[in-house]
Length: 348
Image (cartoon, rainbow, N blue to C red; front, side, top):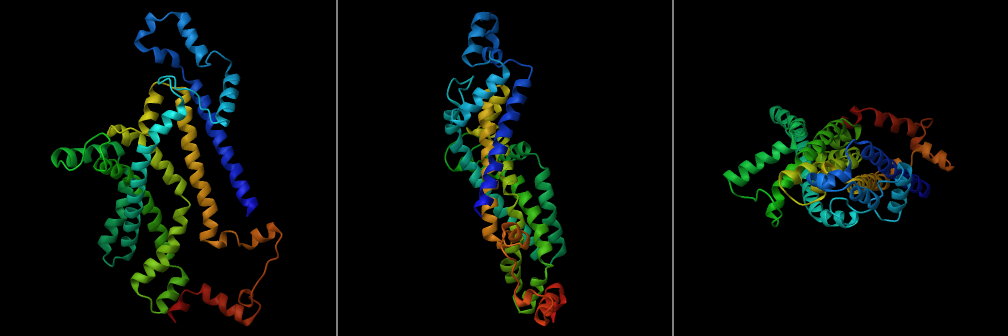
């Protein structure tokens, strides 16, 4: 287990380094000059000596490899540099923008899980075929709807026509509802699509037939046996869901004029604030890696088969053990294997 954790940690470090390096190269390949963007319309009133002084101040006059190594060493010590446009440490800027983003992201995640699980469960539970067809059509539709358009429609209906929620800003819990719903739609649709397919496949498993044969009710079979096991494959895409939430905050916070990581990212990219953009990229990569690392470590605890596979035992040097019922060369084992492989065994 220790070796498994160490390997995952090494992979996480490699992903963070790759994300930082790629963002550095992409930003410095852009044709525009961040110092001239900082000066803006006053560029004609600034002398070349002052522009060179700004480049020296932010280290932009040094060779590219020197800049990269210096910034990488500073990042390893927790110093992400100073924002060119704000004149403040990048860590302070991200620290102030993080709480509002966490608020809508956590609420959106809860709404997405409730929506996705509900749609997937109802689409397989209902006996009415047309209801199941309608519910199965909702996830692709939710994924296809542009986030900015959906947010504007929510503002139009629930802020202007029905003044129930604020249209913009950060004014209490009521201002979280519309941004969270906007952010939750594509995420919930993704969860619903993955979970519905996994649930449909799980309902065809032999142990589901066994549950029916034992007299379990319809709700018990779907909720206790099928949904619980169908959720395991969906857990593997947690990192993608977290990444989807982070990318969605850029549009959502811009549409609803909310402070947060999304608006900071949009402004930093527009003004080519290299230290701030690199800080945002590193933060997003860290969140993505952390989410996947948690899933990698938790998944074996939920499903012990991940670490108890015979191949894993052989790699670890442990002897492979078989019980009498697992040996197909015994009568008990032959009957057990046949009953597991025959879906009709549960019906009898």
